[in-house]
Length: 82
Image (cartoon, rainbow, N blue to C red; front, top):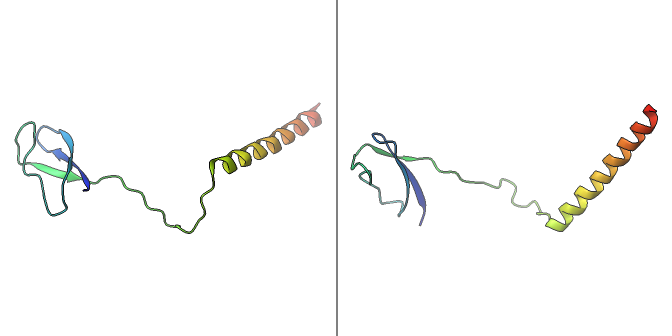
């Protein structure tokens, strides 16, 4: 079941509810107000699903190699400035 986020327009309370798309919440659980609305919820979308995800080990190796290259460049710059 989807999770929906609601907010009361009177007491400004927020809460989450699990229910079907066809169902709705009629009143605030704290102040019993009927002035409630559903807030947009966060979602994610992967536009490029065919992109191969890299494994953690591969990302770590890539980071280390990039860091080594950066360090070499910084050493060269330091040697040239002396």
